[in-house]
Amino acid sequence: MGFCYKINIKVQNILIFTAMISPLAYIDPQAKIGENVTIHPFAFIDRDTVVGDGCEIMPYASVIHGTMLGRNVRVYQGAIVGADPQDFRWKGQETTCEIGDNTVIREHVIINRGIYSGQRGTFIGSGCFIFADSHVGHDCHIVGDCVLGNGVKIAGDVEIDEGSILSSNVIINEKSHIGKYVLIKGGTRISSNVPPYTIMAHNPVSYYGVNTVVMRKHAAFTEDMIDDVAKAYRHIYQCSTTLFNALKRIETDIDDTPVRAEIVNFIKDNNLKIAGNRFDADD
Image 1 (cartoon, rainbow, N blue to C red):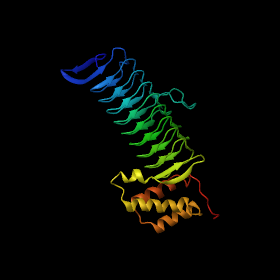
Image 2: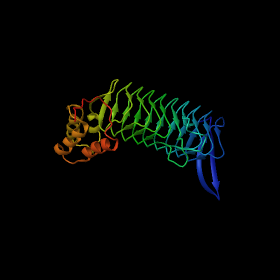
Image 3: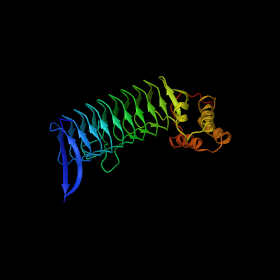
Image 4: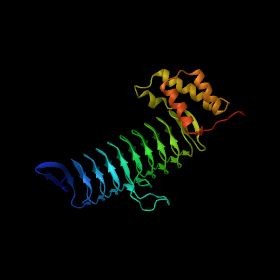
């Protein structure tokens, strides 16, 4: 850590924070830096930013104005967090980007801020891992413990629920919604809503089964719950019936459990529009 100098700021003899900051980094005077932060040479910390306790900002990484980093966030070389939105509707207004605790942002990732002032803007929850060369567009909301593989591209206004994994080079189109504990295999392109607990693969995208490996790693999911999920998706993807009728069958055949509710409510809340090949019968 010899390249850094230690900063202790006191107000009325009370220690406010300690940080290890390279003299070769740029830190705007309006930036708020937490305790035990490490900022490497040639990093850029803009005005109106918050860098939480224990964060590490690597060389040539940038944290742009309107960005708030939680605790223990690591931003690797060349990444840009809170970049200006790539959307013609944005006219220069002040907007935000928020990163949750313990999230890792690897090399050359670009995360855009929101496009509307006064709204939440872009949000990435705690415990996420974003691999190199990925892009997260404006106003995306990614809940905690998600993984974005190398080269994942996410357009604006996308929602990704808890625990989902997007493998390398997945593309998510604008306003898509990815449910909880979803696995999307590498190179798949998504332009609709992916219901929870599923595996999706190929182009055009196809239902590839239930994400049992991830579900079994979480104590909250029993084998009976996993069986209920498999039964639900047999009705949805493997029977020649309408999606409306599939939901009726699920509500009749499967006990009212949290996983059944998650599936049914997701599909209803997204206007019965889901990704994956289906062969609907005529009404």
